[in-house]
Image 1 (cartoon, one colour):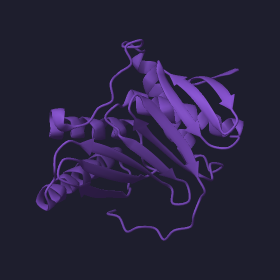
Image 2 (cartoon, one colour; image 1 turned 90 degrees about the vertical axis):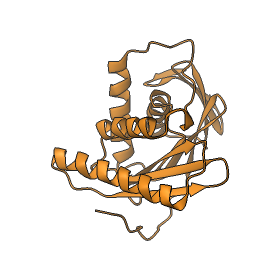
Image 3 (tube, one colour; image 1 turned 45 degrees about the vertical axis):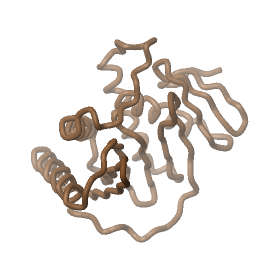
Length: 209
């Protein structure tokens, strides 16, 4: 057994089990190289740090990362446009403060009782501070309607500085050109599931610059 940044990893053939801040994480993948195991541990730590994130997906071939947020209410077309404009405005303002240019794309899907808001950013300019801003924006915008994962009772007071370092390391790991497969992380009840997808060449989606 080897210690990883997010906790111990136990190899199980086609799966790995991580323990991140007291939360069980299942990794579904065949024989991961050591560097990919490190990336998985860091991504798990990021998802535990921000319980507001329902899922995330990195796409190395496109140089993007997508964060999805779940809301327990139906968003009308008008509401979807409003939240998209609000997110784009906040991201544009944040990038202006840092002197960076970047791409942001917001997509929404909704049914009678649940909605999902997907925010896609280019990894080159995305930072942990922007992620903190986005989660705060969603928390303020939707309040109790925003689905949050419970913080493990065994670790209610994790070192915030260590958590921030892990999040920053996770974003840096996703930028690694050696990471060729798309990585998906999401929540299922009290677990975090992470798996890799084969990279596919796709036309880059149009996004606001």
